[in-house]
Length: 220
Image 1 (cartoon, rainbow, N blue to C red):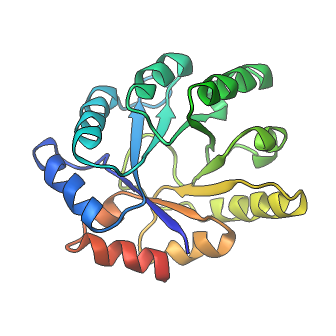
Image 2 (cartoon, rainbow, N blue to C red):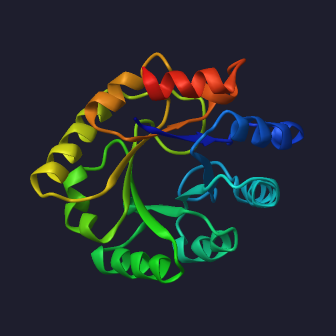
């Protein structure tokens, strides 16, 4: 069965406390924290995501899945390590070269945190193959990063399949997370392709019943 990482990006500030509580009751596996710096992507969400992380750490035990859509990766790693996340994911497109990626991976691990690498829809997945043995998760972006409520780009499904095949052929123990535009209606596409962690925001938080939405995504 897959795990669900619920994005709170689109949750209004006046509803976040109730939403955190309701998502915990509904048994989301992770809270997905979409951190944007206004440079790597157009939107800026850092301040409100820090606020939301503070609420989560004070009232919930659900692990944090932090997705950094930023250019100054080290700066934001340091900010979000304060919230003791389960995993911090950064974009391969935001690093200059493999050496920088390795240094960031080592730094996150040295702070007792798992590491993920995210890949945008138009980035060749083979670009990260030689990093897989160093990390815990790959996040395949199934939309262009930067805002919630987008439609899943179907060509990204093949990227999930390609990654899954490489992982199996090389016997690598790693999670595949799919992120963007995933709802009950299309979740089977990404699951069948090989993703075992599903990020969903509006597909869950815009529903009338969080538990029903999460259960259906896990069991469809």
